[in-house]
Image 1 (tube, helix red, strand yellow):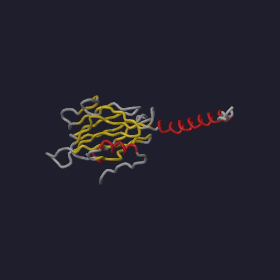
Image 2 (tube, helix red, strand yellow):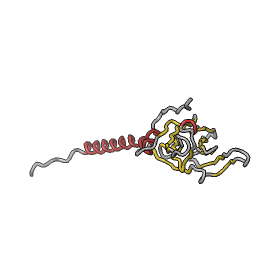
Image 3 (cartoon, rainbow, N blue to C red):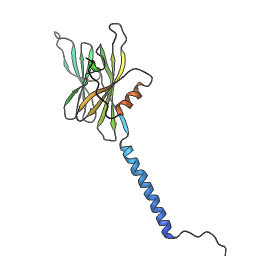
Length: 192
């Protein structure tokens, strides 16, 4: 009889299968945190046309109004309009209010918000970590076209603040999302 290859001993086969199974588990375990941290966007309405009016000025007062807009995962949005300028206050799940002060940190001319807000969320059921909204502001005075910025706000248990003002451009949305997903960005200061 000829000499051919001999099958490996049973112990070697079992050990090889065990190592392969272990390798699969290691790869799956290392991918799980990355999948759990995947960032996704949730969109909500953020304009006076689509949100519920909650307060409006009397005829003898200046023109102002507040609107309650939908939020996500326990967060709420209050849109303020006053003298043709717009601002947002975010309401945390704790019901604490955080004024984004858009009319001072992004631009103080005539302004409008919306029509949508983008919430950046890590993981399947994670809390939102950032809020992005379009803020159109007239910077040069009467007759000028508004400049359409994206305001990026950081959200945390401690509060919310605007961290970035993204100017119009070809990759404005992608830039705003990348900034929103960076941890530890500082709040913009009100110009003095």
